[in-house]
Image (cartoon, rainbow, N blue to C red; front, side):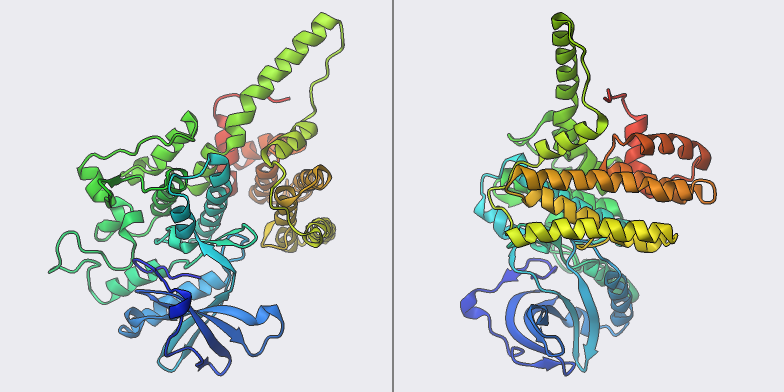
Length: 492
């Protein structure tokens, strides 16, 4: 675990001691080891005395002076913690509780083993190929998209706040703490800059290397597009090994880079369309920046770039061969194309999961489909939504993990077929809600199309329901709407 403060210090094994180690907080949490520290506090490995087994290990962030100095900050922090407690996403570190125990204010979080992304980048000084960087970029974008959908702006997204677990999972840390500092400063009538400090002095409550130009301006409220700029910087670092606005060995903050008219050099391992998407994410102007994590995800997705033209060419080529040979040509069905594309974009991993994990994901996905089907029969749509796509026990997560972590073609295909079943199941609530709650029905349709954009029944429902709801389009439909209204594509 790591801290979201300015520049994070990772404590070496020989130095992982602190006067707090051995302390019991709230008569429950025993601080075992210092994991990391920074300006916002220290992070400890702790044991929960009320829990047995592996789940007894938690990470505890003991917050620093910026919160203790200002009692008003606790009100803001409690609100942020309450929001974080509601978040459940496989790419976000879970927050368990927020506690004040005498002079100590701390947050109890999920403990995960691995390394922060800044260490990964330091080990790959020349960057990594896009196919290796893409799963990390994708999972970060999914985490930010989920947060933004819940009204939370991270405000301090950076490699030190992205965790790579030992199972190659990506998890985002420190949700909204930088924004809490911003609001603390505002409550106390202070500026985030020290008036007596030089222009190069670091602002309070953010990491300037990953802050957008707008974050350096007073009275500018946090915006999801600030996180998009930071994600663009992180994606660029993964691909090149260095910051996009690094000049003569020094990283320029966004306002400095803008004033010096710096422009990032195109990475060697990126396609033209992906490069345009990354450039837009790195725009110094919020109005011109990529509007959402979903838009950036769609624009960078290698499947959209790699698969569209080859499929068209292959279809035409096979048709020509069939015509010459006098054969009857039948192109792939939409279902077959979906499965083929999933398998093509998830090559069998060199680090497969354990056999028991593979079985577990398969059983978990199939069980979730059954639970969701029962929930639909009872018109319990909230429960069904939980089973289908909320958290690391969801159907979507299970089948995506099965597809990505399999070492055999049979298991990978089971994951792709599970996703196909999942997308078709979304049509059940959409049909049920079609007349009584069209916007909600359309939301279910778009969730299904986010899994399989070729599913015929969902496409038909989308055309019908989008006319019905008019301008009242759910946020989940932004990507679908963009695809439908964008340049025409050839579908099977």
